[in-house]
Image (tube, rainbow, N blue to C red; front, side, top):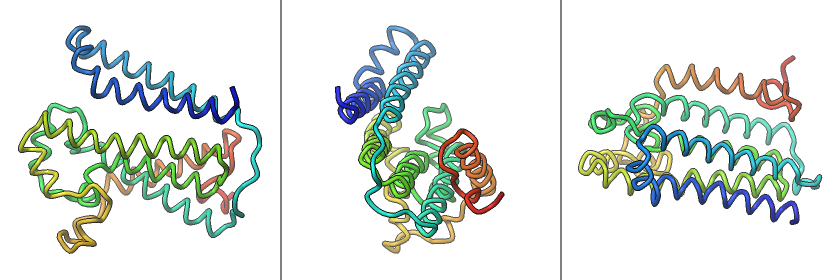
Length: 233
């Protein structure tokens, strides 16, 4: 199998098993196995298929970049990853989209911080991470990998809207009515206040620390030096 074909096949396996276990097969398997064993199986399958996809990507032959990547584009990509890190860290507390017992209660709160930006900050964080990598590694292989991750994140968010509406009913519908899927859509349409979008301390501080750690590890593990470390040290 050609390297690109292998990447696409493993990517389809990663996305397909994720959607199947998140939606179609979740209820019957969880009922038969129990919630905890199902979560273990879900995690093992997700990690295994993700590792297969990454291994296929690493096996891609060297490809010439489709455009030149200078400091300006690296700055843009670094800021995108910083914003994605803030969204991710902010999504870990008070997120009605997470499968937590207090999800319905969290949906009653007024959307603030990252949730005023988008009701799916974690998934948009992954999609923006993928975009940043495509900007600074403009090769067909990276486009395929970034496209797979971005598709899973955003299509998964849309599926999550449907599933949460069934599980939480009016609580999720009211949350959806006060939030937006696309980042800053409510603010740009004049329906939301820009001041509400200021991330809270745990999102800002946690996001900054995550960004510094991940971009440092990027170079330390032998990949391209990323983030502020391109200009410091």
